Image 1 (spheres, rainbow, N blue to C red):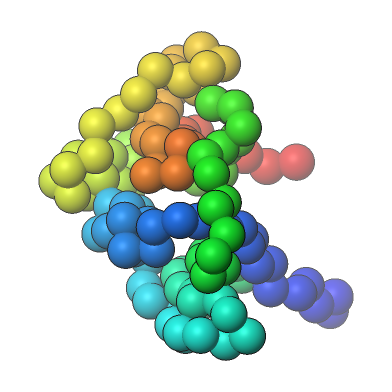
Image 2 (image 1 turned 180 degrees about the vertical axis):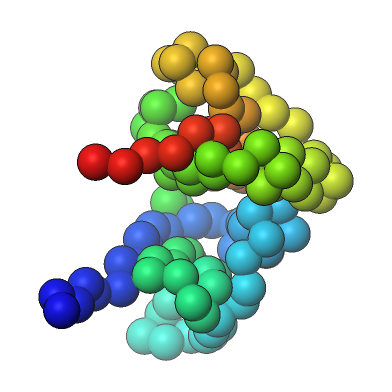
Length: 131
């Protein structure tokens, strides 16, 4: 059996608290780890212990990270069961986040796009993806 590594998606932010609300309360991820002042960085890791991926957000003291460079920086979550998809959309809306029009209208056909406080976007796609 071939094993696969865990994937960590990491990026900087200027507002870890706002991202915590978006990714924990809206996306429904668990806080896996937090740290403060590790070589001048504060950080937050979110995911699910069972998932093969997690997200790390860091804030470098005395450094401005800025916003996403475009509206087409996406993390896409394929949710083929309509009930799971609707639950994800509702959870995001209940956390106070409204869907935004996708830059690429393809994602609006069977999905909903939400923008995090840094301008990066996630898509809940009501479809399967097998390749």
